[in-house]
Image 1 (cartoon, rainbow, N blue to C red):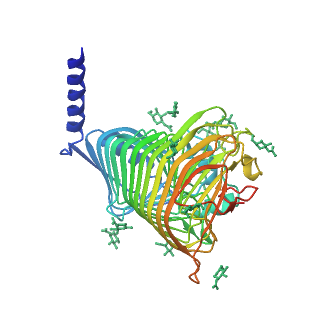
Image 2: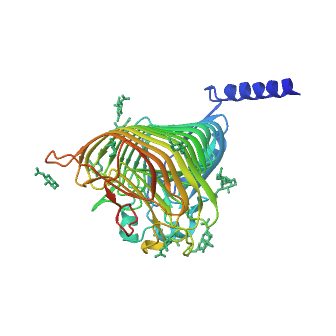
Image 3: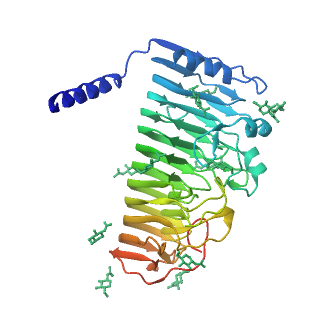
Amino acid sequence: MYFPRVLLQFLAVAGLSQAAQPRESSTVCTVPAAGSTSIDDAPAILEAFRKCGHGGKIIFTNTTYHINSVMNTTGLQDCEVDLQGTLLWSTNITYWLNNSLPVGYQNQSTAWVIGGKNLHFNGHGYGTLNGNGQTWYDFVGSVSNYPRRPHAMTVSGATDSIFDGVRFVRSQMWTLSIIHSQRTSFTNIYVNNTGESGTAHNTDGADTIYSSDITFRNWEVVNGDDSISLKANSTDILIEDCTFHNGLGVAIGSIGQYKDVYETVERVLVKNITYDNTLHVAYIKTWTGEQVGYPPNGGGGGLGYASHMTFEDLSATALRGPAFAISQCTTFSGASGNCTSSKFQLLDIVLKDIAGTSSSGEVASLQCSAVELCENITIAGVDLRFSNGTQIDDYLCGNVDGTFGFNCTGEVCVGSSATGGC
Ligand SMILES: *[C@@H]1O[C@H](CO)[C@@H](O)[C@H](O)[C@H]1NC(C)=O
Ligand SMILES: *[C@@H]1O[C@H](CO)[C@@H](O)[C@H](O)[C@H]1NC(C)=O
Ligand SMILES: *[C@@H]1O[C@H](CO)[C@@H](O)[C@H](O)[C@H]1NC(C)=O
Ligand SMILES: *[C@@H]1O[C@H](CO)[C@@H](O)[C@H](O)[C@H]1NC(C)=O
Ligand SMILES: *[C@@H]1O[C@H](CO)[C@@H](O)[C@H](O)[C@H]1NC(C)=O
Ligand SMILES: *[C@@H]1O[C@H](CO)[C@@H](O)[C@H](O)[C@H]1NC(C)=O
Ligand SMILES: *[C@@H]1O[C@H](CO)[C@@H](O)[C@H](O)[C@H]1NC(C)=O
Ligand SMILES: *[C@@H]1O[C@H](CO)[C@@H](O)[C@H](O)[C@H]1NC(C)=O
Ligand SMILES: *[C@@H]1O[C@H](CO)[C@@H](O)[C@H](O)[C@H]1NC(C)=O
Ligand SMILES: *[C@@H]1O[C@H](CO)[C@@H](O)[C@H](O)[C@H]1NC(C)=O
Ligand SMILES: *[C@@H]1O[C@H](CO)[C@@H](O)[C@H](O)[C@H]1NC(C)=O
Ligand SMILES: *[C@@H]1O[C@H](CO)[C@@H](O)[C@H](O)[C@H]1NC(C)=O
């Protein structure tokens, strides 16, 4: 009994690695571009994925493709996408609000969902997805999660896949959401969601949900929200060799939004990151213990934990808030919640080797739940200074059990904010 099972597993693994070999593409589809904003290129793109999405290659030439309708290209297999030009999304808000596709979490939706096995998406460092987001930035104003405002791209159900050298500019909302995906890497990616009046809100660089073994390497993100955010059931995540400008830094969460639902974030390594004018280096946000309203903008009362997360070799210029912040106060649409009632626990978190400048006097602001204390937090090797050279050395704590490498210097503030601190 024992022997055959091992043998079967061996054969399965051998079969998998064979399928992952690069292979000669049997079919090549070069997508034609109509070259007019009034002609939708999406049908031609969908046709190319239909013909060449299994064992084939899809080429977007160095031109502009106008995308006026939603695209669902999931279930691909052994497929290569060669993006040499620009995909430019239309700005018909009436259309997108009525037709954007469900992502499968938080009632979020998307303009393009793509996924499959052994998918190689290559942008060569110049292939671009342009969300034409200025229209959205003007339209939503200060509303955070405007229902049915689309993400630029959702990678859903991808396994053993690679996305390399892709540029994203002016994303409609979140840039790249990654859901139900495993063993997939996103390398050499550029995101710039600067609009006419600066970096726009809710234009996250990337968000992971229900995904594992995901690598982000060599990203440059310019945005006004989470640089990269790890949400429900994100495990074995590596983020390295990245530069983040203006946004909020690496976010864990928000999480704990679904009452009595158990979710985790585990085994995260964030390494060799340069921060330029971001709010934090890293921050963790959970919903409160009480449910108020429903997603996307309401919720709370979720269960679970985030653990074994390491952030190291970090260099920062002009941080705008505490380098590391924990806030467990998220509740319905900006209302002020109970910051100590969350049932979602944070434990085994390490921050080490952080140098640079900040305008905040706090290295850390740890506003933890009294119901599930934060356990075992290490912060070591910190050299953060004000621009005048004075060392920054405040560590504000609430409900932290186990500090390593630092001592708490005061009580954390009482009150909430959506982005950590009060
Ligand atoms: C794409 O085309 C533009 C102008 O048509 C040209 O300037 C640019 O160098 C081309 N890019 C590549 C990568 O071939
Ligand atoms: C925008 O989309 C709506 C709904 O699909 C459609 O009725 C309308 O004609 C479109 N407007 C433009 C300017 O294309
Ligand atoms: C919304 O989309 C549905 C189905 O695609 C369509 O039947 C309906 O007319 C659309 N409504 C608007 C306001 O565009
Ligand atoms: C995409 O198409 C697949 C196959 O038809 C379907 O199962 C899936 O639900 C679609 N996804 C979305 C978000 O519409
Ligand atoms: C979507 O919103 C509805 C109504 O607000 C809510 O009942 C539902 O739970 C939400 N679904 C998800 C997946 O968040
Ligand atoms: C981001 O885009 C803006 C507007 O196009 C540009 O001015 C800025 O230089 C870009 N930033 C980076 C870091 O590429
Ligand atoms: C750190 O990341 C930068 C890119 O941001 C890269 O150039 C550099 O080689 C990396 N350093 C190490 C030690 O890997
Ligand atoms: C999330 O992870 C938890 C803990 O491993 C598991 O019980 C739950 O089913 C997962 N949820 C989803 C939607 O995958
Ligand atoms: C906040 O939650 C804690 C823990 O459940 C509880 O002890 C406290 O009374 C709550 N505070 C308020 C103002 O409701
Ligand atoms: C926290 O650290 C202490 C001391 O090293 C250890 O005994 C305990 O098991 C740790 N707790 C967790 C949850 O890792
Ligand atoms: C340096 O700047 C900080 C923050 O503005 C200020 O609190 C501190 O007094 C300054 N130190 C000196 C020596 O000027
Ligand atoms: C924390 O305080 C204890 C007791 O005063 C002291 O022994 C220890 O060296 C301090 N640790 C750090 C990292 O400052």
